[in-house]
Image 1: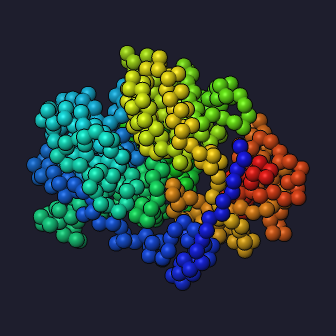
Image 2: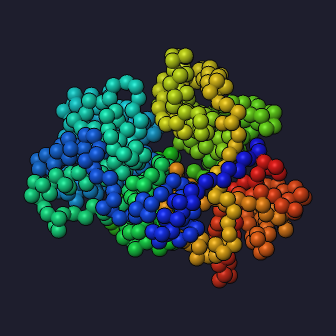
Image 3: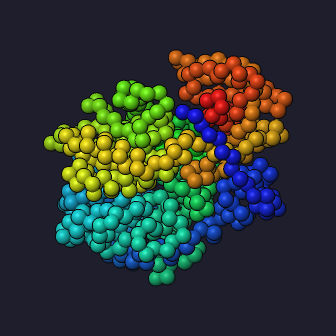
Length: 581
């Protein structure tokens, strides 16, 4: 599908202000193009963090926790089964123990048997284990029934979450902290679940300090939890606003100094990534997927225990186990992805003209991987996509569990809400966000769901939305094509809403060849401002047209290629302008 390259605008006055504040020229231009206007926005110092007092319900949460610690009550953390949930659980347990809690354990739902969130069944398990206070992390805002069940069993409940609340009544917990709940004026609406739990601990520490438990000098150092906060924040793909960037920057700073939990160190080693040069990309593409794989295919307990242990040998064993699970996930995903591509091609055979939205299902699909496959299908076709698998839960083989991914301009959860109104019998459960959502349906309702989703997409999507676009930072001056400049770029915090630099300009193709197993990648030699530069286009399995020798508009990111003791800059091609694509 043709790609439109759109160059970001970097206001000259903002570039000048950033350079005057000491920001190097290339970074000043990149930051200005991402809305940064002053040097203070880039200052990672913790004193610039938004204060916890801005979060609605956080005082009640601190009071509840302080009372539980004073009374030595048994506390149970109920976590989600993704990386954000795992890191939030580890932060909660480590932080509460640092602040004096004597009895803290956790319960993580099984993706297949329990489903998502705090359910009555989970509440019963927690109560049966003798706990008195239940804390949710990265879930709970939609668990009114589970909260009521827990309270009926004598449990107090603290909800910490960051997901958007539904239109039904909020859970009536003893305390609820969520920047997205109605009436909360906290300026950062994009904190991950782990960030919310970290803020609750900050408020609790402040309260205990007021109560005379310790002073500024003797209080526990909660900043040692920031590596976990950074990992969960990036892995959950939340928007990296200024507050989130500070949390991530502080976590990265400590990791590069070797100050991190043993499990994180072991995960860096298992992924073959040097922690001394840790980057936010390592969280999203190396550590995060290994932890997420446990929740998708096995038991997230493995991931949580890896983040909790202080024993180096145990951490290495757990990290190796997570690495093995992730490799299995990659193989399974590869097979499912190709099946999904083939299904989409058979269902909609007209090249370059996919329907407004796609729904695919195969009985062999695994429900733990449908979200990843939906994302790959969405990237390939630039359409909202849902991928379904048969439920593996006992007695629920007649149900399908689906995961969807969307494109900018199509709010997936709102689309599901409209489908629920138009076809009340179709959706047994649904939830999510604008760009990612999930649902459960009866297998007999698949065709109805497919048609209903396509109808909503036809109504909502406009031609401009269906045009595949890539925002770039324009041309790269040759003086910045140096290894030290690339290293400086890699040290910055990039991610969702603060995308890594992507440059674009006319480049002549001097040579090209297919490389990798099966020739799945295109190796290029390009002419860039008078110099020959090596480039790689991952996933491109066909040559560029002969006219590319005279020039073509390519978008690329910068990378370092280490070979035989040499370190050279290479371009990683992201796409090509519509004229030759």
